[in-house]
Image (cartoon, rainbow over all chains, first blue to last red; front, side, top):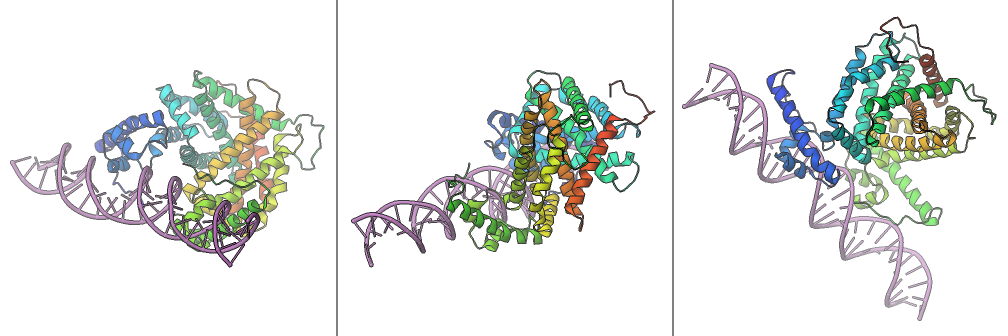
Length: 219
Length: 219
DNA sequence: GTTGCCGGTGGCACCGAGTGCCATTATTGT
DNA sequence: ACAATAATGGCACTCGGTGCCACCGGCAAC
């Protein structure tokens, strides 16, 4: 069921070489995907574009989706480690915003390419699914990272989970908005997203003077 | 690329018949999936369990995943319509909470089965992916439903989107928590989730006295 | 009742994603 | 230069999914 490449010791020479090859394959393989759409291109096409065989392709990427999403996967883990480095008594949203600042250059090194990839992900269900699963995985990790900062208690898990969800929601909204807009700076978009989040939060805590049917529930 | 079943007029006799057959197939097919895991069972197995051929299976379900997720898909659309029926000047989170109350019986009609299915979804990447894509689709629709309630403006889209994300985050957290706990009432779990969300929101607006490195950002 | 239409079904061949296995070809260390 | 080892490619196979067509059952018209 699983490919079990021995995957050499991290930091070793071969390991770095493998990473380079992987990056190179992805770079070449992604071209026809962007050009003709995800479903219109077969693995053999990708392999040909990268100058390797189908079999070798699957030694570097477990699925067809991965060749598109792996860069963002790594961005996500970078975001997580940056977050973990922030002081524990800082508000999670603040930490996250600052962590975003640190890893933003990953996306801006080649903005056009990053945008193309995100658009591709956005419009291809299979890719979006894969992407959402990874995102879900990040959320779990963020949840525990946040839970560590909170005092223990019966409600802590749910609290941590929701905080994580809200935070990642801002990140996702920002990245998608940035991908769709053709010429805006990513920093600006991120700022907007976080400001909007603050506004949402404010609206929820200071409910408008709803004169419409008032529910019995306390909120 | 697509199966194009003529799909008879909604409400007609055949259409209802089809829905029944579909429900029946799903009910039978899901048994081996829960018993042996999603990946360990082939389509032929499912078809055999339902007493039909592989070809016919694909006339009722487009993918293997769908036979597990379709019930929740329908629950989602029911939630959305219930939400749309709430007065426009009500706080979105309030509307959502009340809408949840209306559709909760869908899940509680057979709690054991629903829980089993959710656990299956939770532990199977392919299913989780499919589920997240649908959820993403709901979020888009919630986004426009919420946007209709908001005054127009340049920030409205982002605001609506984040509100939708936060709301659905509560729903998802509640459903997952409920699925994992073996004996709690779903109403209680939902209440907890929404209360936790209120707490998160409160924490974010009244930041703790962080003495750690104060960021320059306004929040 | 026989004929002709029609929706649902099953069988079959086919495509693409992914994997196990093994032979072949670089790479590396000595 | 040579052996050990890693990387590669080819091949056959499984499984999800689709197109095509033949078949079977009901049902109306004659």
